[in-house]
Length: 581
Image 1: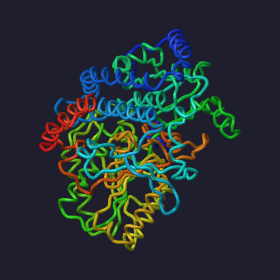
Image 2: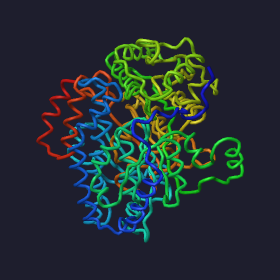
Image 3: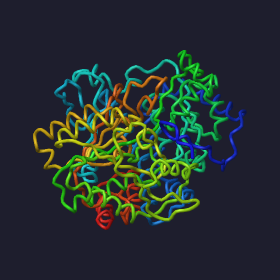
């Protein structure tokens, strides 16, 4: 078995379920978009709000069929946490995105810029941090104790923050542009939300090429965005690498956004083979169009030692296991490395609790091409790995590799995104929690591949110890990741939609790693740098995204209805389902 390349996973191309769009039809779609691009940038805010209202209604109408199709394609049984994932990671977040964009546009129309849900603050090092969650009373009810903020580029001051929000609405472009969005094949909301960002945050019309893995969703995207289709601002096309290359090099495409692999990014920008390597050395890209990207991560969760009770250990073990089992492990923010302190007295008990969580997790179909081969590469490097669930052809059991050596920087667990149900644990030697936090930051920044997202789990009593609390706060700033989440899975930075979602800024095209640029960002910050999400150490009732939540499918459906037509009157029924989870 050949070891995987460093970086995000190289994925074999999936078999098509829908015939590729012909070049003639691609040309026609791009011509329509190009003809209407100038009209889009001149579209009034009131008209954009009207369009968003139409999109809310049409997305809600298609939601049930959308989720059903995703469950069927992924082998997910109805009434299980897997169905809940498809609601929460599909129409629910898209509807939330639409409502948040509409709110920001109303604020811009009425007062000149989006209204923040709290007062920005200046951190001790001078960086401005702007609150973005909770946005309203509904958020406070549904996510009690959670908060999120975006740290701005250091050129932004508290007094200039308002002037660094909603650039395209302050200074509308004089010409429109067609953006190509290369959709991801794993989470059904990624493509449409990337398109919404391009349309309403960056002001570009969009051609969305569906990924062959989930191209069955294309007709639902057409239906959900039918008002944008009618007006000539959005089109869906199909195909694999051949069609993707044709689109990327098309003269009518002005910019590109990709959610996927750094291998695909490099192929777009530099080409393939020896010629690509020469181009990269010379700094002469094959494709020099503006390109933004989100390209994966070997995501760490740093577990700060503390006085955890048995109940707290079980909660956080399920929390961490859920962050891998979600979507069968096919998430760019899935936990890949659990960072622990070797001398923590509760480490063994915690690892055992994680294993128990994997053992009771429902097995999932490895629907993404190459999953078996990728797991085999990790098993070849670590034959002692713990596996949970049936084995054999067509199965990828949950896999946990423990007791890794942090000095072996070239370990496959540190260098390669598994892109299947594989996670690992690495103990670091440190004299006390402060030293551990410092070592964990250094290890995460310097050894692990990628800069997309990470989490820090820390007990509230530990945070109250002045030296440890200060060390954790410093770590949040020092961790070179686009999102840092305290006490929970960093996918919340994606799901809440108000945070900016993307890699840590600064990667050149020659070394793109987890990508460049941000999406979502519904308060329309021009220069976001890092999203920080904080949550309670233990949450009750059980979070809807947990692997053993028995009512997540009910919660997902009710959240979909709530975001389609927000009303506090719907909350009691939703909370009833949550309490039974």
